[in-house]
Image (tube, rainbow, N blue to C red; front, side):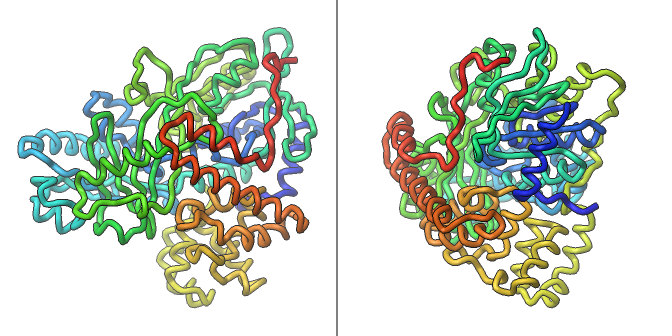
Length: 576
């Protein structure tokens, strides 16, 4: 099966299809949960549409710790079912659903007291045992105990007096935004209609029954009515906003918790493993990320701008202070290449501390025709999607097949293992260095042939992008042609990670990337200049926000950058 393209022509076709008849399911929200719902529903034989007000994965789903994990710390909270469920999903993603995108990563857990070894060891033993009992530990080594000397050989950057020994265990990681995009392309391949920059502004109603959504194409300003037998709200931290469109906050209440991450060059921390540290509130990860490390995260309440959560100086200093407690050579703000902030959509509870709110998910049916799904963890998105579509099935006439997404590989996965073994041949045939082929395989899997075809047609696309040597020019064109990228920020922040992986946050790469996108998207010279100017302004205000002392000051600064596509003004009673 050929993977569906998600270029400008396909977006127009999707909008026409959504406006032209009644869907079984309309999904509102293009993050990981919405993408999962669309794939689950379409693979059950339902007609599906999905709309996203901004770029796909532009919210929480591109700003996570980029881990696929069982949640080792939840064992301490005795939440065995959440851990078991997540470990099952980790195994499915690693071995069946997306082996090209999800890969193993080791973590070192330093022990600061000798008495911790049996306690931590018992927890990690249970973690491995739960994975093994589900038959999903294949390919991941079991944990091992290390002396202080052994731990320092794995992680020489640690201060000798910061530990008495360590336990090393394994989890997995993923490029979160790329994974979302791949789920969406898989859904489109099976027939789902998908469009970004389309905002739901109200619901269509027949009495109490929701019969679809009123939407606006933010690119053109055109209104669209999309009729559907069932609407699924998968809007994450915007869940309460969508619920207000049906006359109240509804059955699910979501609190946004801000987490920030720092990106530093790989040579700043000498180690061959990731690191997990306990903090007074939660845990802090040091995660290998290509030629970089990702360090995070925080966990603080956020009630300001949901579209652009801001990282303040206080946030950055918090992360640096905690990681520097164990590093032999402390990091400074000058070592930080990139910073990103994201919001977790946590189910609101009685606790004032967001770190204590539930990471589990819930599904509600507040009015006929509307399903709400919120909470959860990135790792368990597929289970969340299944539960949401199960709820949809109750509102549809006739028998709906059971979910099959545990057996549906994402596009790029089928045949990946064989192609990985042939990467030397791919390098010779394409004229690319073997490391470039490895990079492409880990981003596209077997879809690498589509990217290589662009280079064959235009050899100039084999060259690295100016200002960001890690990415080839072909990847920028491919993002616009096939991956739904409509604006420069979509490519620099999500289709690639240039915005957090370069010292200048992608400024040097911006103009060339915009010109590469111009052909597939039909941009004029004026539009190219506008895209570059917008991107530069966004980076400018983010950098300035990161110099502010607190959330309110940082948020105020970030409002200084205009939106490249302004959101629609939604009336409080946006109901028909």
